[in-house]
Amino acid sequence: MTNSNDNLNSKISDAADISKPWDKGNQAWWDWYVSLADNDVKGDEIINADPLPDIAIPSDDEVISELAEPYHLTNDQIYFFKKNGFIKLKKVFSPGAVLKLRAELINLLKKEFKVDPDKGAHDRFLSLEMIWPDNALLRAYVLSPRLGQISADLLEVPAVRLYHDNVLAKQAGCGRTPWHFDDHHFPLDTNDVVTAWAPAQPIPLEMGPLSFAYPLDVHELVNAVTFEKTGTGYDRGVSDVFLKNNVSVNETPFELGEVSFHHNLNFHTASRNRTNRSRVALANTYYRDGARVVNAPTMVSGDWQKFMPNVKPGDVAASPLNPICWPVKNKS
Image (cartoon, rainbow, N blue to C red; front, side, top):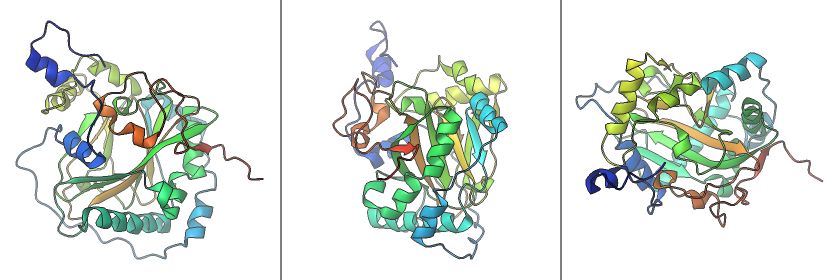
């Protein structure tokens, strides 16, 4: 994305100029980003979420074994993803693996933010990134051969690397996530990028599930909408264009164990969380092995060098924190 033309006045130019790198932390980035969403000031009443199911929780070894097993995609599923830029797949995780993940994510969020995301926490979007290097259990979910294989198969590439993990908690009452596509966020020179978005509980419509605009090429409709680093103009602009063009949007609940995969050019959003339980998810992004970092990352890429230490703009995107997740290398 280029800077505004010199003949524009400085106020407009500054609002649209995102060329400077992000100079704050990860949570500050999310606090800024959700401020760009156009929200109904009135809001809706908070409702009680259904209790989580009471089921047996697997051991760490059982989770590792489960997530190493293949998940077979059909040609129709791969075609659907290629055409629409997203797909929702059921039973990617067992119910027990989901609830084990949730308990671990809640503990991590409590430790970092000194608040229970499910009790007395309201209106904020919390995020933790790069957890897997120091957490053996999270490593099983993030470096999962199953997720890596699905991602490589959907992208139709021979190998994928991890960009980063992302623990996301949309608290009770937290407003919309603005319309966006992830191409802005990942400073990679490829469109062979997919994010596996794994809810850590069922997500009814009232909780604000991830919603996807489709087909994939609808992103071309909003190329003329200028991204701005303050205000809600971009979000409103995208919404208006989609409405005028009768763009289809998939907004459906997530079952326990269901995981969505979205392409970096897929436009997506999420509604307000109107329940009293945080909407917790683990989002892992994978990309084609061999991709490079773009020459000029912007502030929308956030703290990208945290995910790729010692990798410079223009370099091959392959630090020790970006392991190949598929295919799995044979251990000698």
